[in-house]
Length: 233
Image 1 (cartoon, one colour):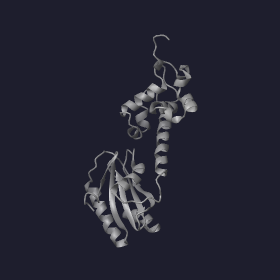
Image 2 (image 1 turned 90 degrees about the horizontal axis):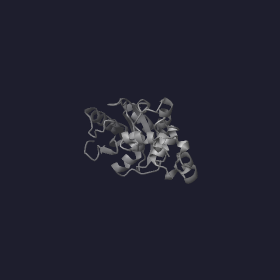
Image 3 (image 1 turned 60 degrees about the horizontal axis):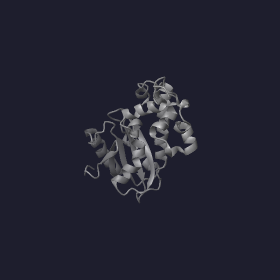
Image 4 (image 1 turned 90 degrees about the vertical axis):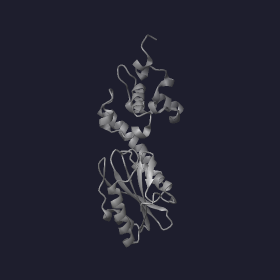
């Protein structure tokens, strides 16, 4: 081999064992690294950089954290040399499918017995978002989950919540109780004054409708704040 490193060669010139597509086909998906899986999405590298090395560079920019990678949009990815709009869209779409798959795995019959249960049920819906979304978890009398409903979405710092939209699905599906949830893309776990105000109004509305508001979960990254745990309800 000449003085050029393997990173300057196309993947087709690599040993079959080193090619991500062939490696997946012959050895299974579990043996591939994150970079190799992303390289398959990218397809090919540049003149001076293989798809795998390009993938490694993208991962390095988010500290090799797939959750952080999932927060990148098309506009973020196209800033990397070698990533055009089509490749960026492919990566975003693949990560979104992974998030939806995780969401679909949430059991509709699971019981909520703690704030940790609430977080685990809601995290797949509110993870990796660069804007706020508001969800409501509908519960039966025994606290088993009826459904998880998105109520609204907004910008980076807030979303508008209409109490009528919160309680309509609860009434329609005969829920006995609900758990509120939204995310903070900023990573701040502290409730805002707006969070406190809307929670108070929803708790009061729930009393009139005889639908208990058991908790309000704020999700920020991999952590959460529970209004119930903090005595804020």
